Length: 211
Image (cartoon, rainbow, N blue to C red; front, side, top):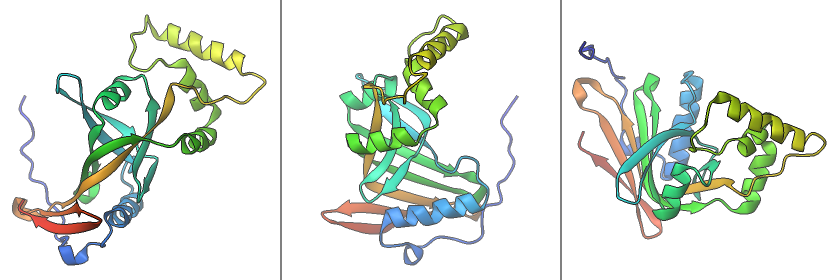
């Protein structure tokens, strides 16, 4: 069975350099709030691409937890595959897809660890069940079966039955510090709008790219 050959009717309204906020993070927030208002599914979901020790690419969805002038933050098990890949090669690419609005945002740059105090603050804000899951899951490791995971959950639940759940030493945050951010708006006839912010010294250069 082949893929559908349906023609997407892209938004007629475009996106130009003159429409772009001088700060790409502020522009990201404008589009993010519009995605929320439009009812886009998981608007803070983002694909993060990394490479392994042999340069082979890898990618997966995570949930973005902060977007500030410092960069884009997400949290994970530091001993997971993506954690180990980022420890070995601290560079990554991100892709946000707000398909209901025919939009995507791409970013890439160096990756640093989120400061411990910020990771602690975010950990405290998480639901208790998610905190327990952070201890119980040895992310990316092979499980015998589902029962093994549920046994770990029971063990951690019992361990912290009468206390707060502390942040595990293997759990923390990564921050992608963007050097480029591209805003893509779908247009008719595949003549899409692509506006790229590129960091030059201490300022952002805004450019239009060919579709």
